[in-house]
Amino acid sequence: MTEAQPLYARVKDHILQNIRSGAWAPGARVPSENELVESFRISRMTANRALRELMVEGFLARVPGVGTFVKEAPARSSLVELRNIADEIEQRGHRYSSRIVAKSEVTANPALAEEFEARALDRLFHILIVHEENGVPVQLEDRYVNAAVAPDFLKQDFVKTTPTAYLLAATPVDELEHTVEAALPTFDQQRLLGIGPLEPCLALHRRSWSRGQVATVATLTYPASRYALYSRHRTNARGTLSQ
Amino acid sequence: MTEAQPLYARVKDHILQNIRSGAWAPGARVPSENELVESFRISRMTANRALRELMVEGFLARVPGVGTFVKEAPARSSLVELRNIADEIEQRGHRYSSRIVAKSEVTANPALAEEFEARALDRLFHILIVHEENGVPVQLEDRYVNAAVAPDFLKQDFVKTTPTAYLLAATPVDELEHTVEAALPTFDQQRLLGIGPLEPCLALHRRSWSRGQVATVATLTYPASRYALYSRHRTNARGTLSQ
DNA sequence: TGTATAAGGTTGTATATACATTATAGTCGC
DNA sequence: GCGACTATAATGTATATACAACCTTATACA
Image (tube, rainbow over all chains, first blue to last red; front, side, top):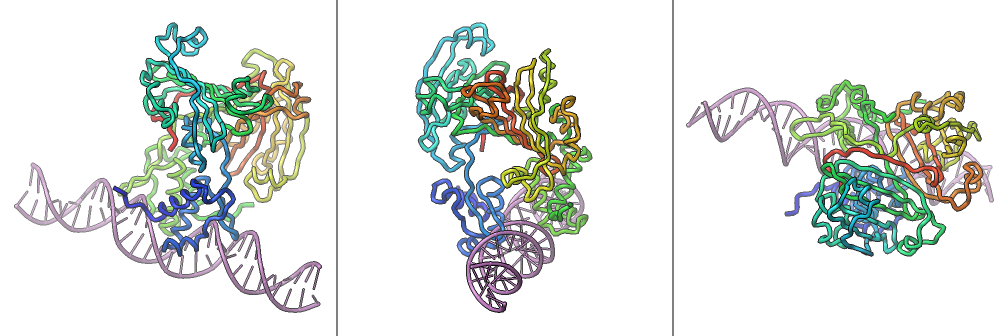
């Protein structure tokens, strides 16, 4: 069942495994092209392709005349795309874990109903999760989910799948709204994130629509010292530069 | 001035130009590797690299046995669009004003050179502006501009035109990078924005590229109590689950 | 007419080779 | 001890070649 993988992909996997497992820490030197040639019995062009692609993908830094090194993984999350924080953390070669603080069905108060653009909501799910990178809390996820859109939400095992991953798989996302604010943490946030009262936080408030309804409303709180939000993208090649 | 560009980069530029100008519309076929070999007098491996990289970068789609085609432009928009803060404030019916704190030509230190992805920068402009809404500071703009991209930058009257507006008009923006962080204000920031030391701020760090070069690097600092970043946009039906 | 086969073009991968560029370490001469 | 030069190693680019995989089209044949 193992597809025949190209040689350059095998070399990439080998290097990624060593990075992800922590065997090669950030800053560590990775084998030179010629060393890969010998150990994998490949040509230098193939080794070059593997290393070059890993550099483009942000895992390696290469310095002519010196060598190739494991890049420091920037702790930042994408602004534009909906990404699964677990994948993101594992992509950096770190260990993802989570702690579910609360998980329940709730009745909507007026403020929530307004956010969901609904006069009366049948059912609403609530979940509060702390996401951890190498055991350190990096995001507090405070999420409400429209039961009409994802009725099986609470049945999921959120230790294995993050809410984001489940919702992305279960419902199409038609529209997104983001608001970003800076704020000092509340007492509860200090406790859950393990930070002091003077550590500013990013509060990313996100609403997503699915088939015309608000599917979920989430407030993601990031301690400033541990995370930054990031986005990079090409502007439309055909000139629709946003104003 | 014009560095000797690698052959594969010239081929990429040629193709990108044709896409950007609209000469090659989405879905159109681009020259095959062998056609590029003949027209550019290069080897097929070089043509292959150019096309492969443009595919990875999202501009082209390649189908084995068939050919290479211009990809449909992805229907996504930036979370943080490039907007002129003066327009924004006036759109709210408020009065816009600004105060230019500093305006000079500077030499790049290594950190700046790295941000500009340049080994040695000929000239760099710096400007520090406080943007005010009804006389109240709402944004501190700390911007560096690549003189090679916008040589006339310092000649502008930034009381009449904001740097953003000028740069948007003067240079095409090919690519944008945003990083958002929360931070407590430095002493200078407190003074310029008229806020206390405990008021958290949003720091929006933006880099923009123009014709392959970093055109400008700006840090926009917003007092949390006076501003939030907002975006709402439709997604392209395909879920954007990472990896 | 319909189908199987062959031919040719296109992308994908892999190799061996060559030369250029860059950084480091060492050596020689002074 | 210090500077100039050299050797070495690493990455960066480019080429020529080869074969595999895939698709389309044309052709041969039943």
